[in-house]
Length: 174
Image (cartoon, rainbow, N blue to C red; front, top):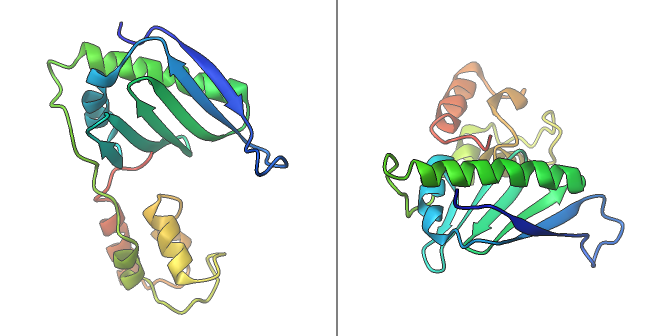
């Protein structure tokens, strides 16, 4: 077992004391830097930095950043949610490390959908039927995994098929 424990720091954004969410920094008791390329291969991070090693990805609707000595998670409901995600991450990190002989480490970010490519497939009418103010906003949300072709009522059946096919080329955020 590589990662055995951590110390949690739970905070609210000082600039927004009214915010309903909290953030968590988990200071790791063990350095997991060597495991990060294996974790990236398994979870498909969308940002990967070689030096110092870190990977960022979205999972469970959260932005999670894993570094050699700490883990950061944003927009949590409460401490319990932070702990659940940290326990899940501990399992993922330790599993990737245990299976590293079977995993090809990845030193690159996973490919991501491009906002302008999504926008090209949308009707560009800014009709607001999807609940967004513009097609550009919809495209940005779709690129982040928050919207899909089924959420745009103005798409023709052919355009819906093309947008679905395009988005399916990329790993979802879990």
